[in-house]
Length: 164
Image (cartoon, rainbow, N blue to C red; front, top):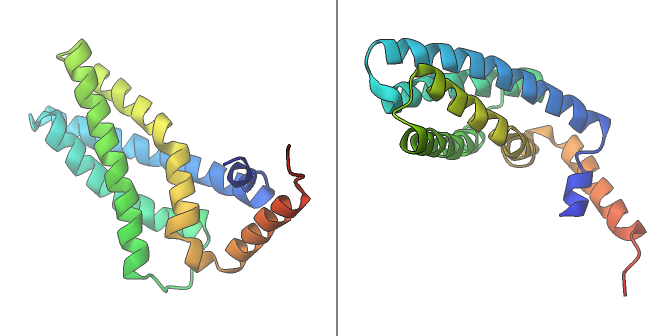
């Protein structure tokens, strides 16, 4: 695990983390805006969250592919898209569970309470999503970067001394 965490300790990974964070902030703002519009339409928190999450996941995919991971080749694969949406469906389930738990523990929540729970969930999920995007979704498209990252991991493995 320690070796894996070290793969984030380079300039390229730092820049990607900053970009994923910025995209995450933008998505969170848009998602919260849509969520509150849907709440105002009396759709309930579950359906408001579901629709806002679906719309912003599509936006996130496009921005992360093009800007964060700088993939402009136009070679979008079904596997890449499916894994991106799979990661975000898992994030959606966790977010819905957090909101549902907050609603049960502190509720019924008002709009501010729902927004606080969603912001908490977004903060909790940013690093796992970065790892999923970098290592699962866009790893094949990144090609050379992944080989470089694998070489870094192997170099770390060789330079570490075994402990007794």
